[in-house]
Amino acid sequence: MRFSSGFVFHSLRLQATAFVLVSMISFEAFANPHEYMLANGLKLIVKEDHRSPVVVSQIWYKAGSIDELNGTTGVAHVLEHMMFKGTKKVSSGEFSKQIAAVGGRDNAFTARDYTAYFQQLDKSKLPLAMRLEADRMRNLRLTKEDFTKEIKVVMEERRLRTDDQPHALVYEKMTAIAYQSHPYRRPIIGWMNDLENMSVRDAQEWYDRWYAPNNAVLVVVGDVNPNEVFSLAQKYYGKIKSRSLPSLISRKPQVEPTQTGIKRLKVKAPARMPYLIMGYHAPVLRDADADWEPYALEMLVGVLNGNESARLNKELVRDLHVASSINADYDSTGRGPGMFFLDGTPSEGKSVAELETALRNEVEKLIREGVTEEELTRVKAQVVSSHIFQLDSMFYQAMQIGQLESVGLSYHDLDTIIKKLQAVTVKQIRDVAIKYLIEDGLTVAVLDPQPLEQKSLITPPSGLRH
View 1 (cartoon, rainbow, N blue to C red):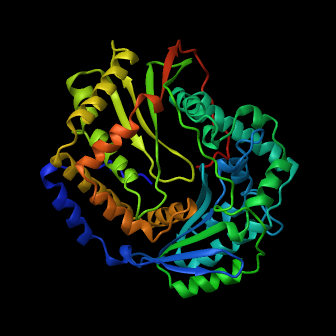
View 2: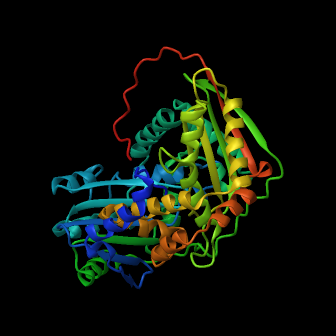
View 3: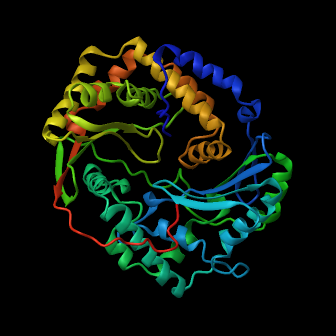
């Protein structure tokens, strides 16, 4: 879960601003969720927020690209598309039409660790959303005809969002090198060869294996009564039988071998400017109470790239003019290993080698001199502000809960996470920089721009989701 804030505040007023925001948001946004467990293993988490007559319903399946096998990469995402193709009761394409007809919106997303489907609509229409979602949990009708059409849509999505996007292409190839054996090395959308050779049977097997109530979490946030939501869940989901499947705990551990030296690669692709991305292996959150390094790494992102006055932007963009854009990123949650990223585009007349040297100098400076208390105070206030702004959205309240539950953590950890982030010290930030921003754990990928060819404008095919 990324806690890095995109909001910009004056450093001397940050702390006050953050806590003023708390009083501006209704207590409803902080109400404790209610948890239920259906007999078939479906976990239901309901969070009341009565500020408007709206409800968000999200179903999270604990299966993503991490669970795929070589030869069928991308199948989790393909099935996500196929989930909108209909059941015996609902014809192809009718799911979204019925939600839209009552003024709602729906969509879905696939990630490394999970696949999720959501609807946001008037609270009175929650039974409709539950009926439709429960129906396709077990009654999806997969046909060769629908699959043949949709796999072409997915392949075009890959072309548009990865193959024809040089930065995305570099990231994909860099990840495939940075991870030696872990499934995170495979792209979520899948390798094109696997998509070209995928069959409707692959999608059916994935659906049969993972789409079950005992492998899902239903999150409902909004102007609802928890007991009434539980009754609806019992009515629509309760009749679905649980299935035998490997749990998150019993799945075989997949530990990435320790990297023992720097890795480098160059990617040639049509582009206007070169690009650099540096990835360092780093831990993720496993125990919200006991761990401390992921919290320090989150704060390190803020120190380097929290806002316009953060170190990287100030030094490399404004002062040295070695970069036209710069970024630091780290995601502290996941079922697999983590990675800390630095990336950027060199300024006109500067090379990626000069940008890499400048980034390395900033890392060495941080390790040598540490972080100031003033910097840390600013970053902590940004984290609090970011978290509070997310709580103001019903959708992101549900996202926080669903993501934590799907990666082996708990929604109970939310308060702990914020408290632990606020407890990070300047020493801890320096310690994680010393331990993880090292050359032996580094992969460097460079975009070598090739001449841009004149291409006709491509109209994306209908059906691209997200």
